[in-house]
Amino acid sequence: MSSVRRLSLVTDEVHAPTPERQAGALRVAIATHDMKNLNAHFGSARRFAVYEVMREEWNLVEAVVFDDVSDESGKHRTEGDDRITPKVEALKGCHLLFCRAIGGPSAAKLVSAKIHPIKLPQPQTIQEVLLRTQMMLRTCPPPWLRKVLAQAGVAEQKPSFEDES
Image (cartoon, rainbow, N blue to C red; front, top):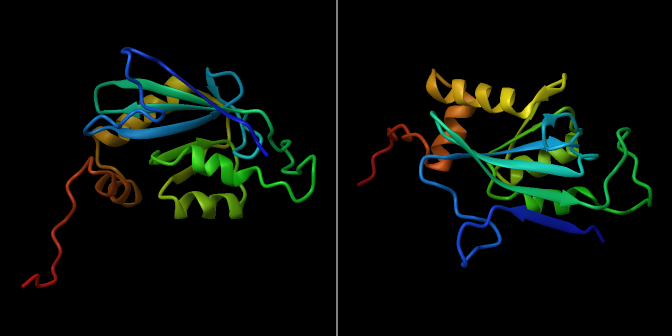
């Protein structure tokens, strides 16, 4: 069984395990080895930096840390050991996940948990990823992101053309 640790900033005495999302914020997870760069594949990432991103600012919400991960080839050290489901469960509440690479079954599990995976083939700093996300929020987001934003309550949903009488 995989061990998961959550590290978050504590600003008061009462702290929920997963801090509530700020209104209008998009929750973004970034696969990282060093908490500075997007430089990990989904399956091999030991850490995920979770941020709330708004048009003008972003805040680190927490770091989710895993003790037992796959190697970069996607092979498990122990066959039959599921390392993906605990990651998906730990990232629930996120809207986007940025990573270097992700396999089809892992991506499908994320999508069914309402987390949209985004592959960036080259390493980037976390700041570059967050700035890129802000730019998408400020300008005309692509259709897939508009759908994610509407589901997250960050953007208005388009009115339905069905008669609601």
